[in-house]
Length: 431
Image 1 (cartoon, one colour):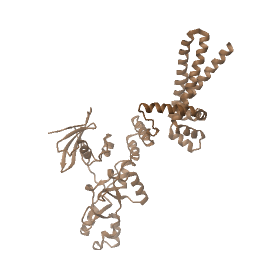
Image 2: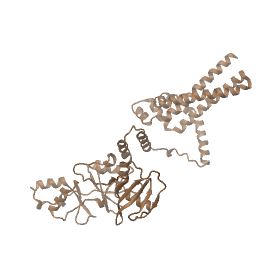
Image 3: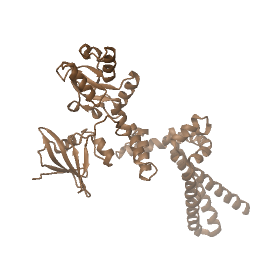
Image 4: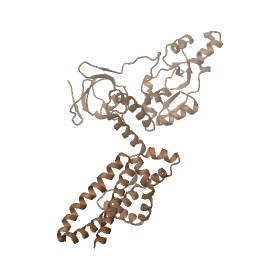
């Protein structure tokens, strides 16, 4: 009887250790850093490669671990119940329940999971070679269990599509936002990382200089006026037309003009701007900022004209425009300072209607949506479902916006006041 008792007790201890192994493995393998494991695998770590293979099929991994964990817990509880009934009679069931609950919770759940969550990468690398054969052996049973679970979930209308999880891009963005909230990443770095992630989602039409703000050059003007316009321009490249601004015929580079003037000995009468103009590069407005950046690098060019589906010029986009989406405004000694936003003493902001929503969000740490509109004026029109008159005001997205100035159908000046307790979007007419 004594030998049987000690053998059973030893078996219970071993089963509790196995339970701790499964619990810790589940936590470690699900919490391990995919980036670090990937890097270790690239550096030749065989164990990191095993972790990658296990995590690649997370549903099968979790199913196998839970199946193994429940098997050993149930078996340990059964053995403990039989031993304690033999010692205490019918009251042994109560003792078995209390003792096994405490033992499983402390030694097989809390302790190993706390250990694993504090060292997930190291823990996962140690247990991966032992978990892998368990997953392989239990694979047939796990597959049946998964099928039953999916069938039951489908019956109640729950979809179990594995592709519905966070993408790597979203995971990086959420991680950066969390680190910023915890003070480990400053706002500037967060904005730059977010700008890089946003490039593939942005179209050039969202970051271009609109045609209404384009500075163009009329080739039919006298040569002296052309030179004067080029010298007074803050830009080195100017789109050129022959009298019709909607038909761009070339792009003049200030350096080419200077080089040609030197070659001609400063003789303005011999200068032919049309001849030295470069062929314009047109790109569709639906081109992504990432694709355009790659195209700029490939063609070693900095300037392109954006056209719509009908071939009409809508604006210009430059390499600097794309880089500013990452690092913020880039200013040099030739840039003209344009006041797009100013803070008033009452806490409100006077904002140009043409100011991009992305710039506002970045400058003031707001979260205005930019899916339906590019500028703050466009957002107001989208929310109002009409072109509001001067003096109207609206409350949406935690802001109260009043139309200060309107030029024909364009909202040129807005007053924006953050609302502390924003209610649902609702227009309010101001007299």
